[in-house]
Image 1 (cartoon, rainbow, N blue to C red):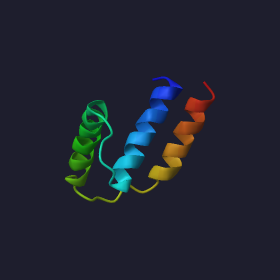
Image 2 (cartoon, rainbow, N blue to C red; image 1 turned 120 degrees about the vertical axis):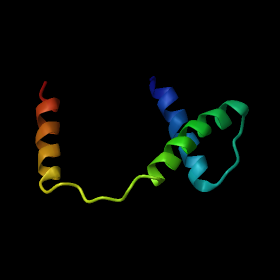
Image 3 (cartoon, helix red, strand yellow; image 1 turned 45 degrees about the vertical axis):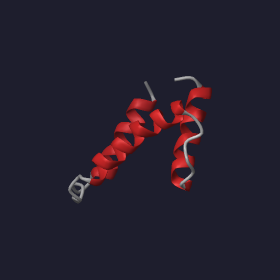
Image 4 (cartoon, one colour; image 1 turned 135 degrees about the vertical axis):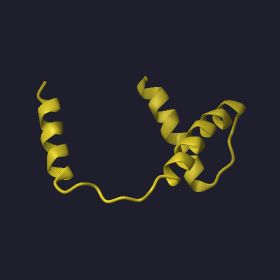
Length: 67
């Protein structure tokens, strides 16, 4: 994804969060993808992460970053 495309995606999400209507049919289509994803996330069970998850995540991030 190009930086320009990424910026457009951020704008779409920002407009959604502000409750603004889509500016075009393409934006409405893009919003549909995000709206479906958000609906799926809302339906997930709320669970606590396993102990030590944050330390493991940071260690993995450090390893991946040095590659």
